[in-house]
Image (cartoon, rainbow, N blue to C red; front, top):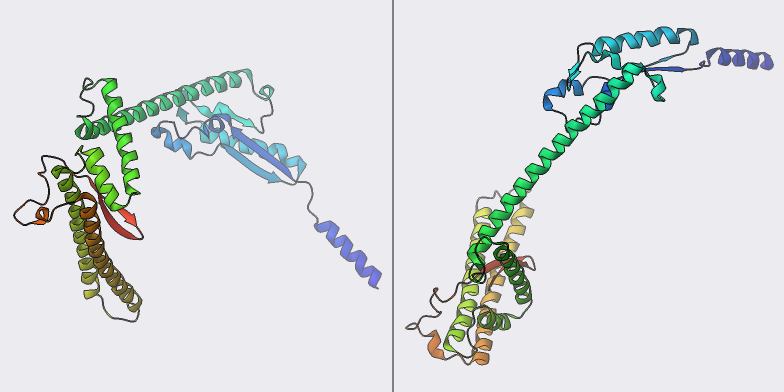
Length: 326
């Protein structure tokens, strides 16, 4: 009995097993050639981009392969009969059985039209790339001219020995900026007192020990402190205004506590900045021999802005914004 059941199961499984599968495929070679050209083809051809160029069907009866192949071919011809692009009309003659293994699978007329279509696609791509390169060059030149205009404001004095607008003049502007960046990076790593002295001597040309030199050092130091104090004050007010309108709900407690902690940190930083200012002033007074009369209210605390202009920048240090003037 058990053997009979096994025989019956085997017969059922054999009867249900699928037969050989035949994949039928037809393609339109115009569509296949243009498939990877959408980026540079004219946007007016966008309807063409969404047209199918490959038609597939799976059948299990070898005798019906030819029938369904003709059906797919008719569908392809119908879809492509009224399509046109790049001067090519009625693209239904591009419908062929695929995969196309060699050129021998195409007729002489199809080969000719395919090669002409490839040439048209290449021409379109070359035009697109040329226009793209020209546009990028135009943008780059505009950016360069804008950059030169900015550099001209800052470094025209250093480059006045060259004719304005000449290649030598422009090269000088870019070189001056490069040297200025290098100097700023160097200054950023110096202790404050050394940076003040270096800036006043090397950048502004004041002789060490002269009144102008002392006043320059004092101006940089006090300007940095005043700007930093203002920055700290603004940040504290922003945080206080933010928590003032904050509802003390359970979900807002964490945010509220974080804001309060940030305020305390900023206040502590402001006090530390004040201590550092006093400390740096004492060191600077000692090193430079600055007289107490320099701090007198009856005497300007810094040279006239006509003598030199400070370049102050905000930099990130330890999570805080720090002011540095050069």
